[in-house]
Image (cartoon, protein in one colour):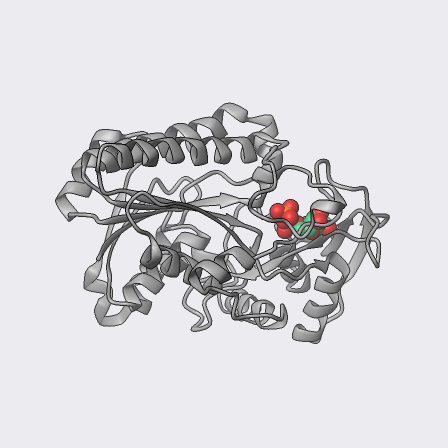
Length: 349
Ligand code: UDP
């Protein structure tokens, strides 16, 4: 199959592109390199070995509908995995227009091009942030929970879920072969176990990479001390609980979902492990994996951070048989740690 991976120079998209190449697919990556890395595309090509000839890269912006359509026709793209997005909650509050433009208008442009070029399947990276701030009775979170995002990031992703749903219904009504799925990610972490790819965000805001950067002495402004945002949550140790899912397992969910989609389907699945871990438990696990001691400091809660968020991943397990293979967080931390040590400047090496 020929698969378009948008955001393939980013963290999750690069892992998806490599997996698809290893599975024998042809892959075309589209990325504007605003936050993606040309180095990630090179790393994918190196790791893909002889399958690297099945990889193409186009530096394009999603808002360039015509160029996207032209490119999809030229490559006879069958399916799109759409990862490209802006993903910082705090930034989305300060720069909402950028988030609506990139995440909603950009996705709409992509879908318009895909429709014109005859693409039949689209898998969309959605997010648990579309659920907003669920109450304690709503956790573990099921897909039928009412989605009430509390920031422009979640809202801009939810809007595209709606667009995709309406488009797919219209295709079905007119007999056009099209199907889509939205995968609502929980906390994605880890990196490819072969060591080829890793997580490189600038700025970095996610817990596990920050913990590892502190342990590597790479956050001098904070004296390499982890600020724990909130220590008085109603959780067993007072710190916030999240569902940490391995990036390779997440990519596997995309592959299974794509294979399962039938014309007219609109599927939504939570992608998580179903287990919640606290910030403290992540710190303890990182200390066990690295054998190092982390300095921590209690800090105020981060605005909009709920106490406890974890998935009920039962729907995707029942419908297509996917479950996160990695049940413990230690291997995810181990792979991330190995890549960071080997690539001290990430893809800027
Ligand atoms: N967190 C923290 N210190 C940090 C970064 C994150 O205590 O420097 C906490 C954050 O408040 C949340 C959890 O770690 O409870 C996971 O945060 P992350 O940004 O990785 O993902 P989110 O759940 O916000 O999408």
